[in-house]
Length: 452
Image 1 (tube, rainbow, N blue to C red):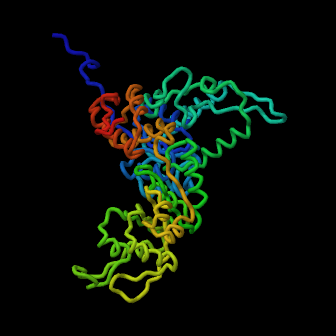
Image 2 (tube, helix red, strand yellow; image 1 turned 90 degrees about the horizontal axis):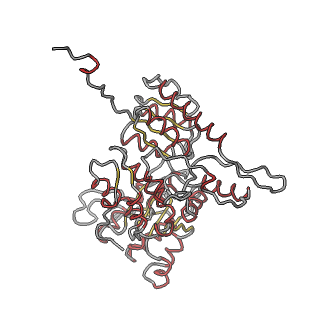
Image 3 (cartoon, rainbow, N blue to C red; image 1 turned 135 degrees about the vertical axis):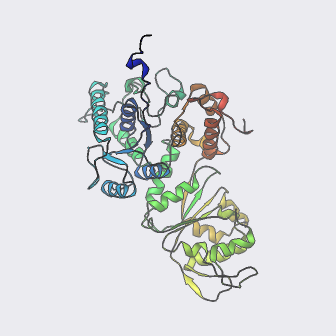
């Protein structure tokens, strides 16, 4: 009997799964680097900002993270040092090849730098070979766009809307820009204005449509101020995300962000929950308790569904809004509290104030600055980006699935009464129904009885 050759007897080596996190606001950078790392047998997760990268790492710490040379929301040097302290086992590299101070050399450093070089070379080659769009506008220079899929663009040269999300995560094809743009002159000032608006988009507010960009613009304008803000919008449209962004971008970001849902707490308990109480103030009050308002001292208080607050309690809240002082239930002393108040509602609060079902004086105190979050159908052009975002989010613990064209068309045909929250839940349900399959199909899309 002939011996089996060694090369046939040995099983194929089993490679250990390695995860890399790519953090950059530049989708082109993330795309090319993800493609390169995937080719080197890495599982890649993506983040558009420092805050999103930090959250992703806390959920499941990666073996490596590559950070772009600029972050839209955090100082890069501080992020590197804080990240190294929090995740000392993660190999941390920036797009320029630098690392945090005293960062130990990880076992994957050379492979990461190699992937960086390859992706940067590919980006340079694509730039040099991309078609140019020229325009004669006096002394203006010709416009030369970047050869990448533009944010928010999903329809291109003879392909369906769903093509962008039907590709595996991190492997979106580089579409020639000439195939996507109409052959009409583009004024430099218009292009610059669009770029500026996209740059203002907050990482937690997904969408490049005008409605979402306006939300980001208003958040950036009012966040540094103490001005009270009223956030109006349908249920599931992201009002709490807006409140969190306002707090994050304010000078109070290091202090508490305290949220309370006025509709989720029984009327009899809501006052004690907000203002606190002393020992023996009512039956069952065996000890005193600090209320939510007081616990937010120095930070931000977010009153969700403020329209559900009883009229009697609105009077007491108005007193606090006017003088920043409160009295605990059962107490005689006044307590001075420094908080910024944000409120949210899905109701047309101005109409309720006119009818007398909501105190008009409290409404005018809270609605000094208004931000309206649009329903999903009001920025339906962002469906592709939202699906991509949620699929990536769901793929943090399991391999990322892809949404095929038929599934995407089914999603696009729904009217989304539950807005973005419903979309997230539908996609989570779909990835579960897909089982071990690498893709989500139309049969996996289940709207749970909420059909058109």
